[in-house]
Image 1: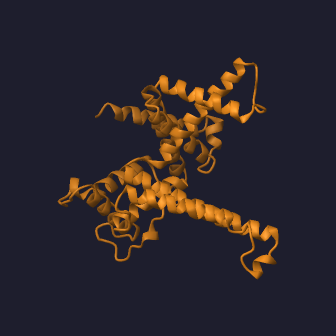
Image 2: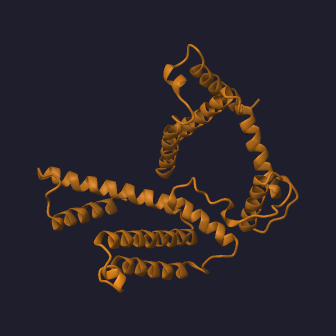
Image 3: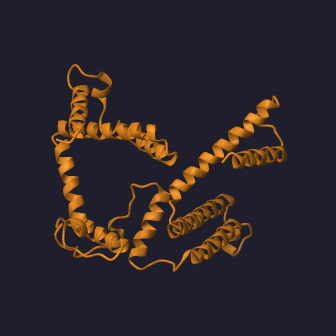
Length: 289
C-alpha cells in the first residue's frame, strides 16, 4: 500500500470522529450550506499560496482543502448520498473516460483536440450516455455560471474559440478593447442632452437609470474583451487582477507608512502629495524587485 493511503485513511477517521457522538460540538452543527464559506475561503487561501509560491504554506492549504473534501464526503455519507470511496471512484472513472488519448486508443493533434474531446465527452455525460457523442449540444449547455465573472468570461471565450468563433490574434482584441472603451464613453454621455421629444419629457431619474444600465452593459463588454485579450496572451485574467490588487495594497500601505513617518494620516492629504508618495512607493518596489 502506498505511503499516503494510511494518512488519508487517518484523516477520514479523524473527520468521522469529529462528527460522531463525543466529537466536536462545532463540527457536529455544521451543514453543507454552513460550510460553503469555509470551503470558498480555503480555496482562495490555496490560490494565494500558489500565487506567492509559498511552498510550506501551500502544503498546509492543500491539507485544509483536503480536510473539507473529507468533511463534505462525511456529510453526504450521513445523508445516504455518497461516500468518500464513491467520490474517489467516480472522479477516477471520469478522468479515464475523458482522457481517451491516454487510457484508450483515441488519436489527438494537440491541446485543441484534447479540449474538444473533453467538451464532447462531458456533454455526452450530461445526456446520460458517456460512451456516445451528444446528439444535441448547445453552447449554453455549460455556461460556467458557478465561476466568478472574470473567470467565467475567459472560460466562455475559450469555449467559443474552440468552436471557431474568435479573433485571429491579440492585436485584433486590442482593437476591440479600444472600440468597447469608446462605446462605454458614449454610454456615459448618451443622456446628457435630450435626443428626442420623448427624451425631453423623461424624468431625470428615468434617464439616470437607463444611463447607468447602459454603462453597466458596456463596461461588461469591455471586461469581456479584456478577458479575451488575456486568453490570447496566455495569461489568467482573474489571477492577474488578484496580483494587481495585492500590488495596490502593498503600495498603499507604503504611502500610509510614509505619512506615518511624517505624523500625518489619511484622509486629508492633497492628491498631488499622495501621487508623489505613490511614485516613491512604486520606485522603491521596483528597486527591491
